[in-house]
Image 1 (cartoon, rainbow, N blue to C red):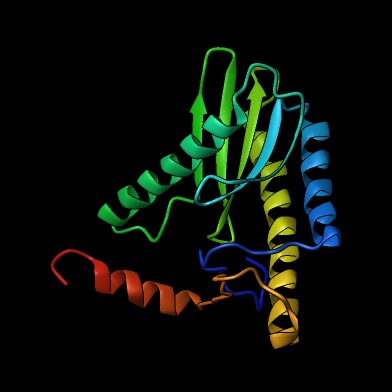
Image 2 (image 1 turned 90 degrees about the vertical axis):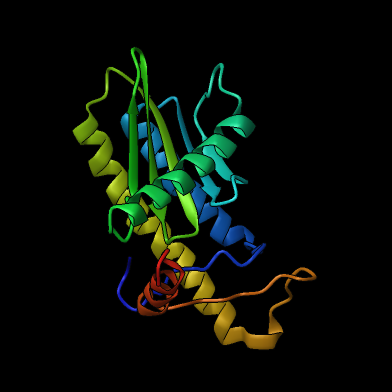
Length: 179
């Protein structure tokens, strides 16, 4: 996560302005082009699609988004059981296609579907770089919303909550079984 950027807590809906959306989408376009990926998808942790790029032939995007979010949530539980703060990358290798799901700012996930013509090392490199750029854009957006204060119109019931890594760690330590 970029220096000075706090994780974006899952606090309901956020409203992206067109400029932020276009910056996020530009990152997805670049990853898809460089990896010749079947699909590059940005989702939130609830499984809602933010943006996608690629032909995605034969892929149900709604189902993939939901299942990827559920997979990451289950993996978060596995990490806690093993005493790890998180497992930020999931990788599933298939016969013809593989998928990598990566955490972005603890609120979003980047899902990349690619075929066996792309090396896993190249996917990890490009996704790592893309994740940094996505986090910078999202954190910049959240800082702008915070500095604007009450001047930012949010949907009814939406909240912007940001926590430090230490605050989140304390919360999850408090919630551990036997604590």
